[in-house]
Image 1 (spheres, one colour):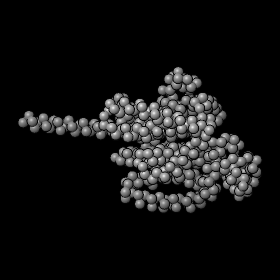
Image 2 (image 1 turned 180 degrees about the vertical axis):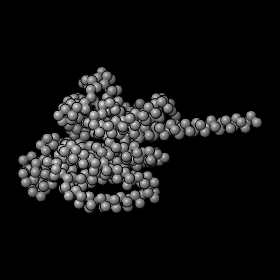
Image 3 (image 1 turned 90 degrees about the vertical axis):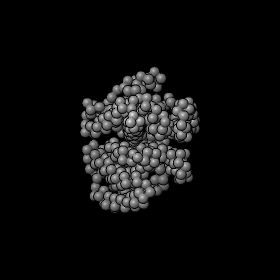
Image 4 (image 1 turned 90 degrees about the horizontal axis):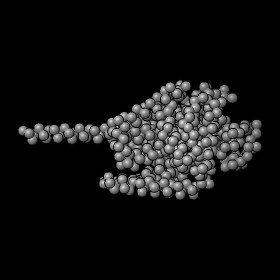
Length: 460
C-alpha cells in the first residue's frame, strides 16, 4: 500500500509551495528583525522543522512502510474524495457522519481511526492540509509543519521576551531539539497537540501578563484549547491549573521580600489548582475518558496494556511497577515514572537507531540536570524556580507531565513520542537555570575582586 504514497506529485507540490513559504518567511523575518533580533532564527527554525517533517515522511513510507501517519494520510484522502463525490456527506463527516458514507470510489478510511473520536478528529483536520497539498503526502506534511511552527515560534518569542540574553541557547532548546522536530512535524496527533500546547501558553502570556492583542489571542486560545481537548485532553488537564498558577503568581513574584513570597506561594498554588479543577469540572463533558480521576487512572491502565502489545509496538517495553491511582502507588512508582519519562531509555536500553538518538538527547538532559544540582545545589535551584514564575510553571509541568506519561506509556517507542510536549519546557528551564547560576557566579567573582582591590588600596 505504501509504494503509492510517494509520487511525482510530492515533488510538484514542494516545487510550488516551498518557494512561496520561504518568500513569505523572508518577508516576515526582514520586517520583524529590525525590531526584534530573535527573528534571525525564524527561517533557520522553519528549515529545521521542514527537515524533520520530510524525514518523518520518508522514514514511515520507506522504512516502516506503514503506521498511523500513513493511515491518517489515506483516511484524509478518502475525506478529500468524499468532498467531490458527495459534499453533503463530507460536511456531515466533518462533525460526525457514518462509515457507510464511504465507498470504493472514495476509498475507505482506517476503521480503527473512524471508530475513535480523537483519532478521527485528526483526520478531519489533516484532510484540509491534504487538500491544500494537492493530495500529496509530503506536501501536506510540510503545510502542517508550517502552520504548527507558528505555535512553536510564539513559545520561543515568549521565553526570549523574558530572557532576552538567551536567544541562542533557547533556540537550541525550543527550535532545534531533534525529537520534537521529528515526532512533532508529521501528520499525527503529536504535531497538532504539541503546537497547540505551546501556542496556548503564549496566548495566556499575551492576554494576562503582557496585555497585548487580547482579542486576537483569545480567539486563537479558544481554537488551541479546542484542538487539544479533541486530540489529547490530558494535556489540557495538566496544563490549565499550572498556567493559572503561573498567571496568579506572576504579580506576586515582583515582591522583593523572600519571606512574603514563601508565605503567599502555597496559597497561589492551592488557588490555581482549585480554579483549574473547577474549570475542568465544568468542561467534563468535553473531556470524555479524562473527565474524572477514576476515569484517568482507568485510561492510563488501558493505554499501558495496549503499549505492551509487542506485535504493534515492538519489544521496547519497560516496567515501573503497578499503579492503581492510590496515594501509596503514586509515592511508590512516581519517582521512577518521572525519571523514566525525562531520562530513559538509557544507552543499554536502546535497540534501534531511533532509540539511540533519544538516548543521546536524554544524556544531554541528564548532564544539564546534574550540572545544576552539583554546581548550584538543590536548595538554590529550588529558590530560583520559586522566584521566577515561568521557571516554576515549566518545572511543574515537566514533572507532572513526566509522571503521567511515565506511568501510562510502558513502551519506549510510545514514550519518545508522548514526551515531546514537555521537552521545550524542561530544556528551556535547564538552560535558564544554568545561565542564572553562571551570572550569579560571575557577579560574586566581580564583587570579591572589587573587595580585594579595596582592601589593597586601604592597606596602603
